[in-house]
Length: 456
Image 1 (spheres, one colour):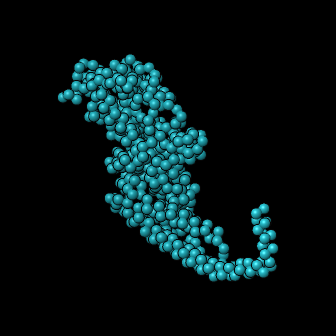
Image 2 (image 1 turned 180 degrees about the vertical axis):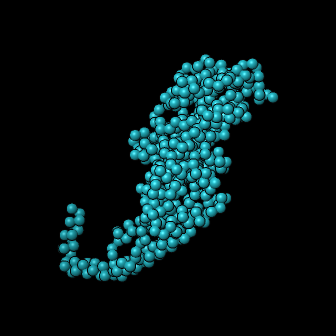
Image 3 (image 1 turned 45 degrees about the horizontal axis):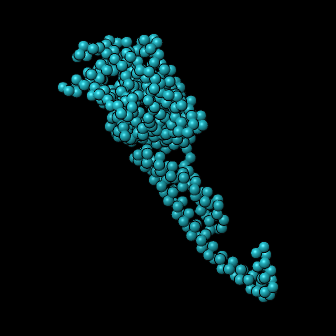
């Protein structure tokens, strides 16, 4: 209504005023045209400069990818791709005057063909020539293992890799899969470096996971090297201890496991941080004690009696303790699974022997979280949240990372700094069930022993 009244008033004011307004509008339009052209020209120059810079960075990357760290090349690739796509999208929203027609935006670099016609174009081929020394640190940068360890692993796995992927040299299969595991790189990024189609890079990765599980499974040594394990724990004041049992969380996105969902991994670790037994693929909706009772480890101890059936250890006060594991407070106290003392209320306090036990117990439990942190730090693919549609394969990838972790400890490769890997284990609720009397007696005997040892 108000707008209509204004229009009528304008009409009553005389035709002259209407002519003046119209002509004034035309004059403004004509004056705006040069300004619009100047803006287009400035934008054209800016986009041309950005395109030129992006192309220069891409050329730099191609010429120096052998000497740059993999983390640097992956970051540059990602940023070049993002800038190129952004420039292309920006151009699609702009008018297309002649001043902009000459601008071309470099697309993201495409992956090379499955078998490059010129091997020198493949990063890995040039890497092998340039990093030929056994002590070249670029092997650790690229594959998170030394060249001697890579060579030994290749010798162990080559027959199986060759049988599974006969058209690809085993060293390419191994290197491509390790690169993805070490850096969490996409299959496109892996393909660009190894001259592979992304689908072939994907197959190489899962072939390696299967072969590692098949051929290196003996490196979970709980059943085969119990003597070494017991001796190792003896050096940290835990006589007759055969391992520390804990749980890790590996994130999965999607509705299946809910918000902040994850796959749970039950792991038994020795005093050196090696994995002795791993059970992966449990839903984070399950409680740790439920997972324990359904695991093969529990069956081997409680039902078949083939585990933890070795001789008891006689303490200095004459008491004997059987072989046992340490477990966190989220698990039940059992004759073979010793959990920490827990105060029944805020007013209660722990005795000196209980405090001594909890101190040593806590130090032992730290071995599990440290082992998980080191696995995530070395194999950064495991530190990423996985998509729900890939959940079926995730447990095999986790076990692969744990087996390779053990392999590299045996090879004496330096362990990654544990703080470099994120810890996602979190806190689990304290187990509220009944305590086993035999387990209480064993824990009390060990607590008294630790008190006497601490007073020496």
